[in-house]
Length: 382
Image (cartoon, rainbow, N blue to C red; front, top):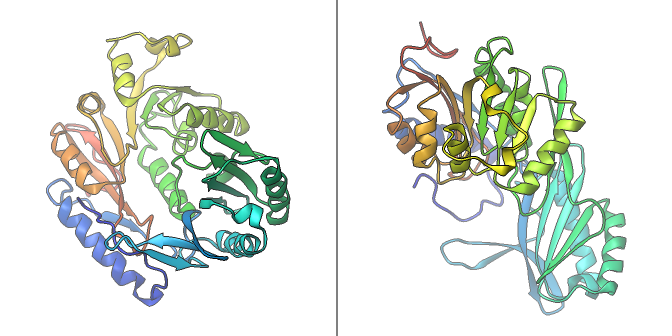
């Protein structure tokens, strides 16, 4: 295991950020030393040391009539009561302060409120999910609508078997690359990139890595685990067509809406797991969900994978072996090392570390792989 949970850092010494990043970089280099050749330099993208998180989740800790937010020490399991959170963006801290005041003065909002998740964008759009251990009635809904207006924040109320919206169920984060702005829906209880600054750097790096793979937009890209279309839309500019797959239906719908908003017309999204996408690619199974697509019309040149911490399954690794170019974005460097070991047909020609979560052991690592015999990548020395 590369990253072990540790006590949340609440007041870091920002003067030591580079030292912390250097230690993390050394750990990644050591872990991947058998797979990244000396001729490939590991690019390192640092983060803002504070206020980098665009989403945060807190327990609500009740002490009689008083209330605070809380994080937990993973070792002792004891609550750490907080009122502000230095790693969260300024907008989240603003909402925390206003919500704390509201909870202390409004028993309808406070009563049996168990947890809150706050999602913000770099443009200030905000969404808050409030999880209760009681039934949400009309009185709560009325108070929630007032709170939503006061905070300029979309609110989702959750209780057992019920979900109540005061407005939209998402906010929209936007990234501009090469003069084109790409939207992303972000919502509660689903994965999205938490560090907007680092996400922008990742998208720019991915475009640079696959610049030549589309052969001047003559060939196509296959993407597994596309999520809300974070990589899909910016990379579509490099390829003739893109087939992007994702199991979560809400994320697929979000990606489709964002593609339409961005006037991206060369992407097809499919609600498939990675294993199902592999079966479809290999023509081992026909899927009703793909009835509108002619898979034979695609001329895939590159594969993009951004799997969860579990990494790639055996079928996805077998699929990757069929591609000349593979871009692998990993949130678990230890599993990345195992998957690279299972791909002896390919070699790393570019690698990057993205510090998504400063002051933690987490490391996001991306590598570009080319099949043996293919030309060198943009970072590899001649």
